[in-house]
Length: 283
Ligand code: BEZ
Ligand code: FE
Image: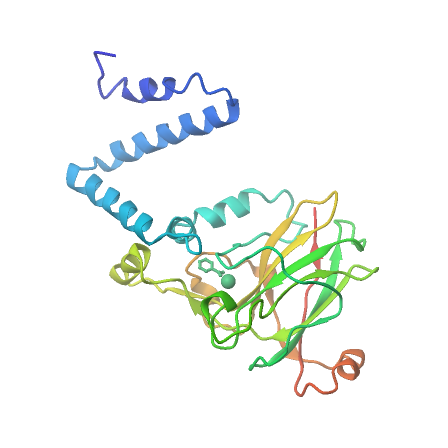
């Protein structure tokens, strides 16, 4: 390779991966190189700009640890996470996916529907109810709903030493008719972490760091595509400028005063119970 030129550099670099045994990985890396070089050509990037880009990555690396990834956050705020979610959707008849976010942890307590997560939480109590269905509207009785959300102060339990461990999360087994019922509090909007290079870029760009309030779900059942998604609040002020582009119209739900007599008698000790109803459709 003595005659490397701007014309042959891209195929030369791509072909240096010809021995990668995994054909899909080889394809992904070669396409990545094509786009990376295309980006440098399209922008006619200078040495100073390229170094500034590397410095951004160094800062991201310095603030990343086991509990917090600035690289995932970069993927979120540059729209890549959301694009991957949207590309994974097979049919519009299924419930669309949305951001996993950084606060999912495995090993939530397993419970059978209905579940009451209220405990000592402040906030507006709400019953989140619906059914897990297949594309033909048939209930899926062996589905699980891994559920997590933030507390009334906007923080997830991992961010807040004043919350009990595992606050406001559970691994719910739906009923025989595919139904789920989780009594929780109305989640709150919150900002993405602002103490790293992504936050600095947001300040410089005058971009809004807010995420609209949401409940997180992972819905799984044998034989169906796993659904990672979020349910938003119709009255949230940040629905139209989510910092990580997770909002989809069908994931926006109405919080209304419950008039369901069964719910109201089951939770008669809970004043002003709200209700959010949404079915979750798996492919
Ligand atoms: C979240 O939904 O928890 C989240 C998603 C992306 C960045 C930060 C937080
Ligand atoms: Fe979240």
